[in-house]
Length: 116
Image (cartoon, rainbow, N blue to C red; front, side, top):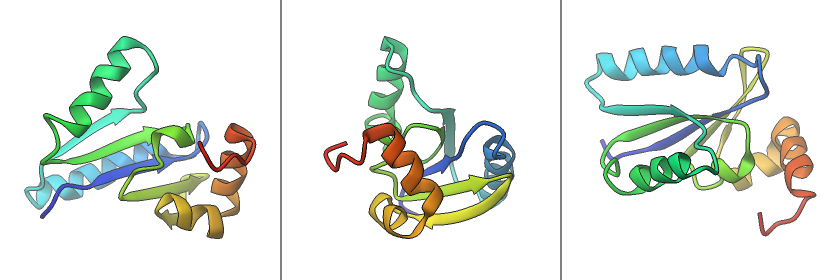
């Protein structure tokens, strides 16, 4: 299996942590090496995590809990949660087109600016 970058997106209380634990358990049972983290911050420690995600950890599946669109745009898979349930799954551009929740968060955070 090639490495994947999977992001769970949702507001606080949406069920991101629970869903990630369930996915991690299943992937671990299948022998798939995973790295999980909360959304890296803009601080120096967050920068080091982002560098590791694209460097040292390039050969493993990365699962991220995120609330900022800027942290998820390059993910192979974004899972949008609403009240603990999966609302939508896709890549950034797909979700902007098909998910009202994702589009609303995107517009709130970027002002609808396509350069974000």
